[in-house]
Image 1 (tube, rainbow, N blue to C red):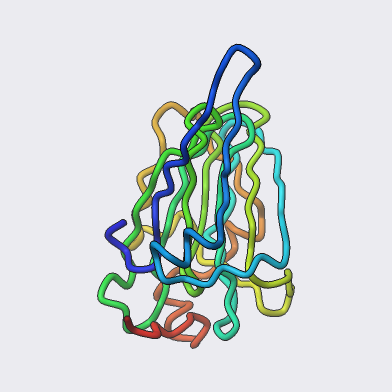
Image 2: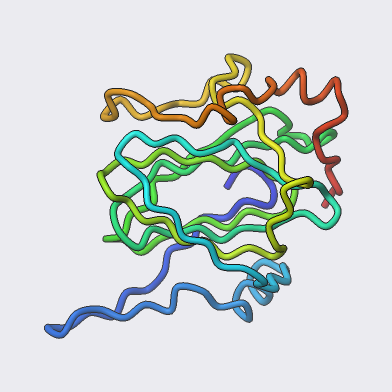
Length: 186
């Protein structure tokens, strides 16, 4: 993707009249192709209503929390937001549509912000992460921040965001209070 440390993943689906099989995560190929060591320590699953908006979330760096995101059912518009102070793409966002039918995904390196909108009812999102959930190290930027101008899907009549995400600071407020991670460079 245009944001350093964010990668679209297109998995090969092997299908026949019995169904399908997908190797949806291979740490060895990620290390070989991307040069990233992705040591999975936790697996998460969320089920969302159509229009559910989750994020923009990120974790303290170090250690940070890299994520590998896919849909088991349904589909999402998945957002990568560069919240890394000093990054050449700071404040920029990019999205990819992830669907259970395509079995595609997105991989985000540590320090990047992440959000998604469920595009279908009962959308199940699964993601692998490289660090355990630590409430005191988890942060958010307001997904409705006008400076970020996330391109929300028009096929969703209304967005359902948590009170916590709606109350999160703007990118500028998070920057001025020192909440954001620093870019480690490439």
